[in-house]
Image 1: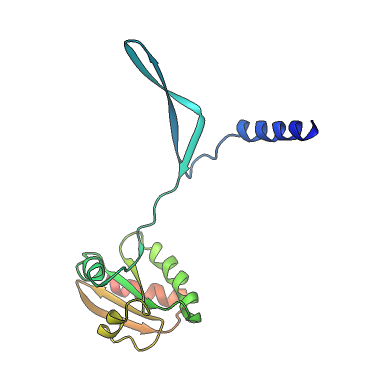
Image 2 (image 1 turned 120 degrees about the horizontal axis):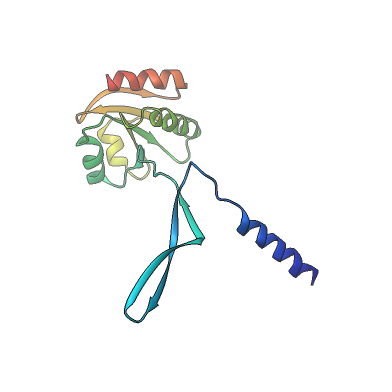
Length: 163
């Protein structure tokens, strides 16, 4: 009996809580009432789903044609991060680079290439150590660095790419 009472209080507190405002856009469900001859749809406040905006500034390369389509043929400048799962410095540089690319608000995008999965691309772009980062604009490599950089150096690298 006490467990039921606690469960009821818990559920009432969750249901009566207001959803967070501002960051997410609510998608409310709709209740459909049917009667002979007419159909009415009314918003139901019982269920709400909240979503966030999808981040499209960073993507993983799936194969050679995907690289060709999303990087070489891109109108937007692309930063290509050649990395490996086993590489410690890559695990530090990757999130740091994603953060700096996100600050550019779509002026540049980032492609991530795992060299163990895509050795052909690593050989084609002469990647001899990881992490290696290439700056590609209009299909051409315009700049490159190997190793870890701090955020200020990464921002300067991107500004040079954007122009």
